[in-house]
Image 1 (cartoon, rainbow, N blue to C red):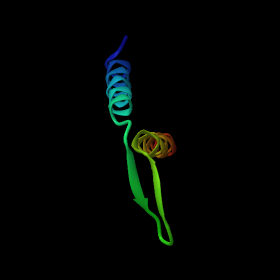
Image 2: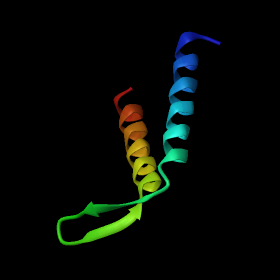
Image 3: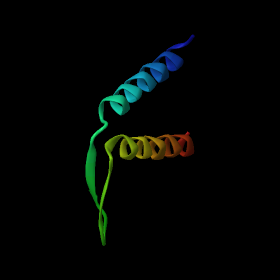
Image 4: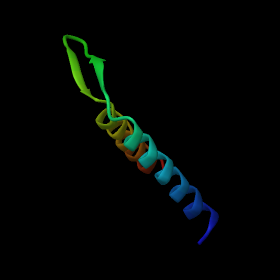
Amino acid sequence: MNKKMSYALVLLALSVLVLLFNTGKGEINLVFDTVRIMKALVYMAFMGVGVVIGLLLK
């Protein structure tokens, strides 16, 4: 296993821990509305966007 794979696995483990420990609900202020949603779903969506951007920049 090379360094790049090790870093990816560490980041994956940290992101799973963040998702597991953030189970509460939070408010998301949109332009025209406010939505109450689980924090873990918001974090997962932002991580997904980050992965897509990273793949596009690669």
